[in-house]
Length: 131
Image (tube, rainbow, N blue to C red):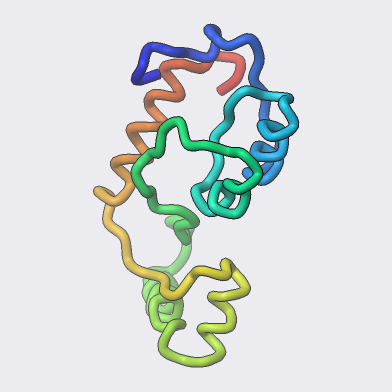
């Protein structure tokens, strides 16, 4: 959208389920382009993928809680999550969540600014029935 291309300018688009499926669909010629996580690109770049544009890194997989949860439980859960990298069992759990995950770090609202900007662009470009 930043370059003046919206979804109605495309011949076709669809959700194919996950990042790997996007890469496979592009490689198979089903689509001319798609968006994937950089890790998926790295895994498949030797197959013929190329980068058209790379967005800045964004916070992914934030842990959230309902406002109904007791504050002491939220605080204790936050402490446990942010301390997991300091013990063997915690590191094993982190690796099971995501192989390259080494630590759960605290975030601030400003850490979501880039994602918020991309979401706003998407909402501006998507037809109302697709939101």
